[in-house]
Length: 451
Image (cartoon, rainbow, N blue to C red; front, side, top):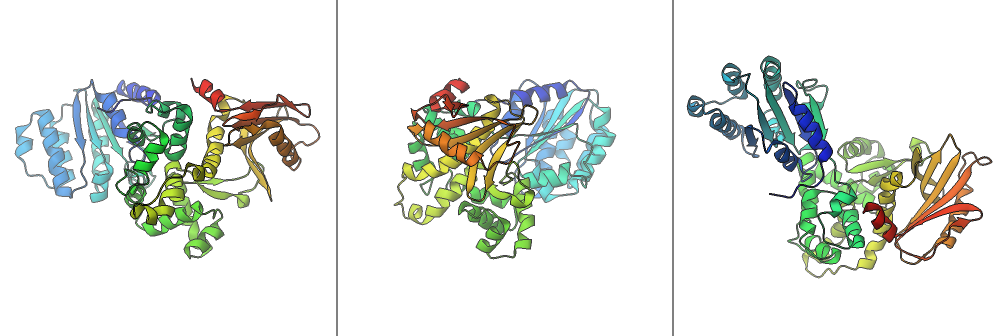
């Protein structure tokens, strides 16, 4: 069995729900995020029925679930019955289940059932209202086709709306937990995390290797690598118009970040691009970023999903050479990408170091500051620069930061300024610049922070 790391909070939530009289719980999230592993860990010492749905036709799905029920309930009559509809199966359960017996019913990859027969949600609505609420049954479904779960199970238009006791959206692991999968040094662990995020199954693939270079060379840049075709599969599960969504992600990887730029790149009208962008945001692939003092019209679109960002920037752009087996990884070519992802990484951990209520990026015309932290009450502002480089000169960076800070229009006469610099290492650190406090963090500092 796959080793179980973190998810303590989700486990605690499920254990609290188990103490209730009855429950209907939905666990969902992207493919390979660890839904099945979480539910397995939760149910390992409990009694019940587990059914993993295959993406086969409806008749086979009904028969397999019926047989799983018959085995648990020791019901030979049910096993020998020919049942061809979900309504018939759940009607039988309504008449025969022992409502005073405590057990679970878990349907994994529930999205495959709903995809084949949308009427199942109405059948389950009746079962929940007439049976589950009078029973001691813990009913849990899990699924990785995000769109189906949101639309057919969680949305206002679903017959199941309002029936769930709890829905749990699993998100990627944070860096400290992701690093536990790996036997790399700190820098290689961080580069791995900035290349594919905290997806447990992906981290297990990386854990087979001794360092980051060996890992990406074999699994990203070989035709038989684990990740070489993964985005095609992920997008095809969620979207019908896969070419359009694929093209949008590709456009952004080439530096097109406004709706007009993206639309021009893929050859459609700007007004037609917005529904696609919103859906990619809803599914967690994209993010709309607005400058900390800016208006929405100043927003840009960036690839939020780390794995997709890396794949489109390096695998997709070099697929011709990879197909011919001649592509060689040049780690120096990855540095600009790591510089960008390092900013987002620092933004994620910023709260561990500084107690600013509001943080974000700032840009205006040709000036840009990676992170700005604000405290409206104390009028404190922290300007932060992230440099994915060794032997950074903190004094020089502070000078550049101070020049850009002059353009930030926020309590200009009253504010108290300080600076923070993050880098791989420093050739020269400073504690003050022009009388203002300076915080310097290198990779050794970050490693100590997480330890």
